Image 1 (cartoon, rainbow, N blue to C red):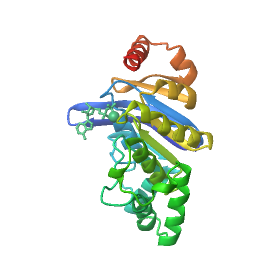
Image 2: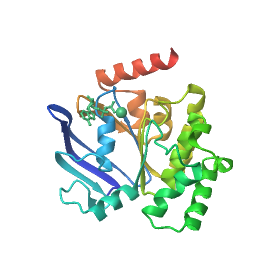
Image 3: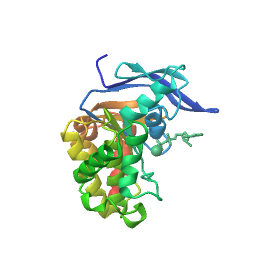
Image 4: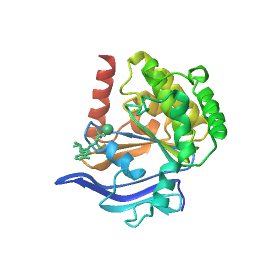
Length: 251
Ligand SMILES: Nc1ncnc2c1ncn2[C@@H]1O[C@H](COP(=O)(O)OP(=O)(O)O)[C@@H](O)[C@H]1O
Ligand SMILES: [Mg+2]
């Protein structure tokens, strides 16, 4: 096993819709892989397969030494997968009826069996890490979108995962709030967190990702060193995609 995450010839359909048509790739430990591609091309589906929110039809997914794509994964192994792989969604998915602190301590207590005190200490530590030490007693609706997303990242960090998956973490944010979330992610990357980031923030991908993967029509249409691929795309499709992104960002 060479890499933190490896996936090989992954296929996934929803009914007659063949979304992933044989996707292979890897994420080395401590590396940031960015996944880009048009809306509907299967980016979220791939991420969801990586922590087994979706079960794949064919292929193989390895997280460390665990083949999580095995049909007979036990519920204990499934729990392990979810605990090892953090996920941050576009829509934050915080519990609205829980305070920030309780959002952060819930899974560590229930899944990792930490005591209230341990989980609280951990939560306060990671809230500090994302710059929200003073928001522990607030409720999600009292926070801005950028703050909510930073809480969601802190919540994921509280599980001390081996890797984190981000699904368009800044797409639901007002433009002026994007930067605070990206800078938290940038810092995580610098500290060596293994990350897979689906994003339309091409500039961020260029600066923070080591590699980029461009999905198109269910396959990996282009991939490689992020700076090279994003500066000098080889395929017409990626070229067109990147020009469209640039236009959208200037509009
Ligand atoms: N649970 C599902 N059931 C049926 N179709 C789905 C489901 N999830 C995703 N799809 C479809 O699969 C395709 C890829 O979706 P998705 O992975 O969300 O794309 P992206 O994240 O790249 O925008 C889309 O056509 C979407 O409608
Ligand atoms: Mg998506």
